[in-house]
Picture (tube, rainbow, N blue to C red):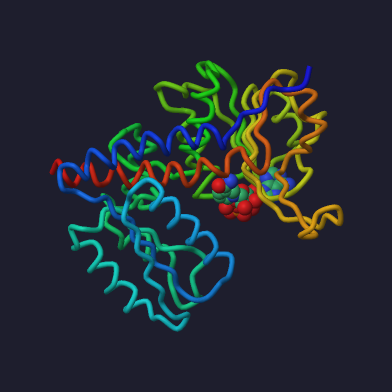
Length: 295
Ligand code: NAP
């Protein structure tokens, strides 16, 4: 029997509905949650991502403003802007869209954002809180969204082997840190794989939960998946497809059609993990506003 599909679009819509209700409550008490996005330069893909985030904010009733800076912006100018945003009580969430021009030090940017407004969850304070199991911090949106997909799909994660393929700071490492915590939808035995992992299949085949965040179409084949496993595919790659009007389509890291015959649960690409990332960004921003309002 083919695996059950995890419908990220529907689960994300539910979360957006919950966020909308929380925004309405905040507004009734005079607080309008606001996300400020800083976009440096004119990378077309970044502009598309930022526009999507803006639309999502408006849909749930939040304020959103995008500050567009030229590609020539200096580190000093960006730092001054971040200081102003940190000090502005009307701004609850700050996000600086990557990639950055080469004169900008990404680590310094992340460290300059006030951790209480770091809705991406990348500041070392929030990274540390995640590792320490302190639920006060902000969790990066994509891993938080994947944990939410597992929760919504009633996966009893405790004691399961979770294998995360990919060790980026934005997905792989925080994902592993989340699943190893002592708490709900966690308590897994976690393995992290990367480019230097020897015999990747020997690890993936023992995964009850397989999360792949690499960006290599077809990396995970049916032979690499344990029968009945939950497979969550973070990868997004655009490949040529002559059958589509656009001439391209998006695919994940998983050989979807073949793996679907082996797995118990599986996320499609698109429509799986992707929609959760923005939903969790909205949730983090409303949390930031709630905390600032309560402070
Ligand atoms: P990244 O920073 O490029 O990291 C990719 C990771 O994959 C690295 O840790 C790399 O290992 C590992 N890797 C590469 N080849 C491998 C192999 N053959 N076997 C095992 N591991 C291998 O990427 P990322 O930012 O985490 O993103 C990963 C993918 O997810 C991309 O396709 C991206 O577009 C997508 N993504 C989707 C969402 C969403 O909302 N759905 C959000 C973020 C990212 P090394 O560290 O050894 O190089």
